[in-house]
Amino acid sequence: MLNQINISNFALIENLTIDFHEGLNVLSGETGAGKSILIDAINYVLGSKFNKDLIRYGEDKTYVEAIFSIDNQEIRNELDQEFLEEDFLIISRETFLNGKSLAKINGRSVTVNYLKRISPFLIDIHGQHDNQRLLDKKTHIIYLDSYGDGKHLENLQKYNSIFNEWNQAVKDKQDLIKKYGDKDKREEYLKFKIEEINSVDMKIGEDEELSGKLDLLQNAEKISENLILCYKLLYESDEDRKSVYESLNVCINCLKAVENNLKDLKDHIGVMEDFYYKLQDITYDIRNYMDNINYDEEQLNSINSRLYQIQNLKKKYGSTIQDILKYRDELLKEYDEIENFGVYVEKLDKKISDLENALNKYGDIIHKERINLGQNLEKRLVEELKYIGMEKSKIKVHIEGSGTFYKNGRDQVELLISTNPGEPLKELNRIVSGGELSRVMLSIKTVFADKDNTPSLIFDEIDNGISGKTAQCVGEKLYQISKDHQVFCITHLPQIAVFSDNHYKIEKFSKENKTYTKIEKLNKDSKEMEVARMIGGKDLTKLTIENAKEMISFADNYKL
Image (tube, rainbow, N blue to C red):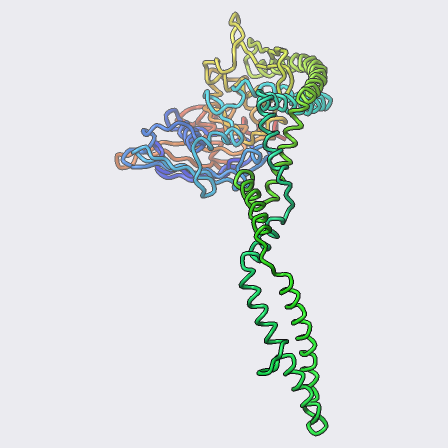
């Protein structure tokens, strides 16, 4: 719903902030007061084309900001994730004389095209040939289906589920054929790669183990020299010196000889004995290392050759053995697909055929349901058009079946209309008169009031060419729609204005050789005076004012 609009230097509006409310919002004013400026401003902030002449004379830029509450899931589905954190949208657009334009939503910059994309889900403007979802014939099938009962919607869901599965199967087959168009050449290529990897017969971690062995062999001489020296110092004695092992034993015995005299030494003796036995284990391990360290040139060459094979595969197929083996498994899977290419295609053909049979079955059911829905909808729309003074109009729900599968059936649907006797049926967007178009849209909106999720509707030029009872009927229909939608109506007819829940008066005035447009929300008394003006013009009489009060009272009673 549109909650507020802020306008700066837009056409005749210098600065304006206006709050809007639920229900039927009527905008009135004398001819030339600038009633269409507000619609132009809303169109502008939602991404429509901009003429720099709309920048107020003498200013270098214009700015419009609109605040919408997010009222339905449909608009949430269209919004980027970053805008779903709030329950409202603050949309602003600023344009300079040099043509530079800035658009933002909740303070984040967006493109004008993004505004255009989401605007139909926020507000629907009737009276012009843009910003109207119903003028896009692609939406007509959606409106028709929403007119159906639960069984029809259930059949549509079943069809759509089958369609998605069929669409994926067709894509899978196309991808398979595209992938294996040159099957034999690809098969040979895969076979070569798989055999190359398998020929090395690698194990995960093997390269790390071999690298360790290689390092040991390459440093065998140095390692052996140091181990021998260490072993001699720790364990071997000669005439000139005792080994560390033997010296430590002597120390332990010396301390034991006096431990009764120096009782504090007992703990130290225990520690030294522990170290003595650990040193014995260490020297044993060092001896084993010494015995096993042998420089073997043949083994060295073998390890180098093996690591070269593994490294060569890493350059081609992956940075680790695990990556290479994973890649090989993928190749094996693809190779299996090629080997069984014919079987896979045959299975997909069978699946596609079965799904197409199911689509045809539900497509036939849905087509018949739509024929009935279309006939009922035609009657409803003709009744609505007759009610608002377009009794000579004819409307046709044109349903054309085909052998093509679409996501919502095999049909193409379009609403066609003839507004005058003798005229052929034509597309909605070929209605020339803005007033006729608005009334046609009003009739359609009335029928689909509880189906249409667009929260706000604007009807401009809806009162062109009508008066009296027809105008009253239009006012009644606008009020009916406003029970489920926020409705804006620009009108000069009192029969429509009296049904307003909120009435706004638009006036133009001059000050210091400059022209301004202002908008104010009317209270009960000022609404009565404005309706009286719409009835009798400038010179208000007591009778005119009483007539206005009577019309408002009648409308209020109708709304009860």
